[in-house]
Image 1 (cartoon, rainbow, N blue to C red):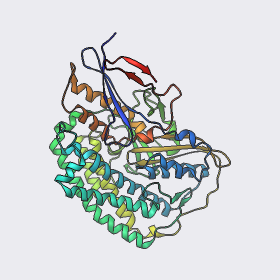
Image 2: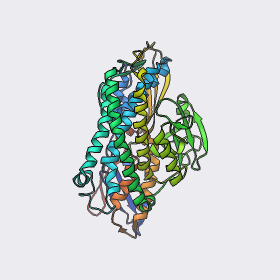
Image 3: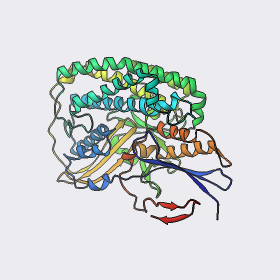
Length: 472
């Protein structure tokens, strides 16, 4: 019998949901395999069947408390494509503003509270100190900046979405209520104050990357395809074409949201509840693709706002295009944040945003439709099949973390192989592996909606010698 050992990192910390890393060592004490996997299941694909389409966006938002707004908007887009409904320009702008609010809310949380300790402290720092609370003791101004940015995102969602989490205003056909002029002025004033904080966050983040880049670039990379929404080669978060580039940056496909499911396939493994999405044409595993902040930088050549465009060009000059270093997700997230803060101001300066034509009448129909948006973590797609009575017959969601799942696992294995040799585990193992995972800002809750029919997860209970006592 082979003398294999396992190292378990559970739970992985500072991520959304419950995840676990298992590293298997061979007889010589070297890494033979490593997995990052989900240990929970939500079941949305099952219990939403038969749901009225009008209620569907509000229930589907409960799949996540962090990126719920993106789920609502993707959901209504899918329904509107079935109903063949064209919303007004006012409604479209308000929905984009909601997406920007969610990007600001999510990214300020991730940048300050989840990933900043990875860059602020040495990688081998004790975990009891390597956290945001220690940073706040040393730099209370950072906490104030984080709260200012989060407050802007939360206020946008609350004022326009009528609720900070699980918004209520977005419905098939548009939005329930128009934006009031006094609220537009208040949000614009708040956005202008937050903009100064966002620029400080960018400067601070760039300083940390410049100081630590020699170590950060050793954290691994994964040369894959990249995918994101794009419009005239620029960032786009709401309802545009989808572009895929290969590992060399060549455009290999560009397609409409309604064709999205024709280009992606999913793969399941019995050891995790999270599926793996990949590109159909290259197949598995050549078709591994990444989405999210770095993908948005790799897919697009420009941003439509001044500072974000300048920073994107600098990013490409410094790191290449496309770039593959895993920890650059955190740098790219700062550029996302800058773009969102600039775009919010542009939208709010438009006085037509308070027009009252926010809603059109819908005529329910049966059929199939797809809605796609750029969520904070990457490209998010909802596909629905509705009956003639307007009930959900079939649903398929492709979540950003599902798409990034393969790249996360490859990076975890590479990091483990670099840190474990001949049974000797180098200091900082846990921190470095978790840094790689956190760079993707994975949302485990979104990615675990259904159990695979091939068998689900097998749990082995072992004694102190590693012998299997019971299998569940």
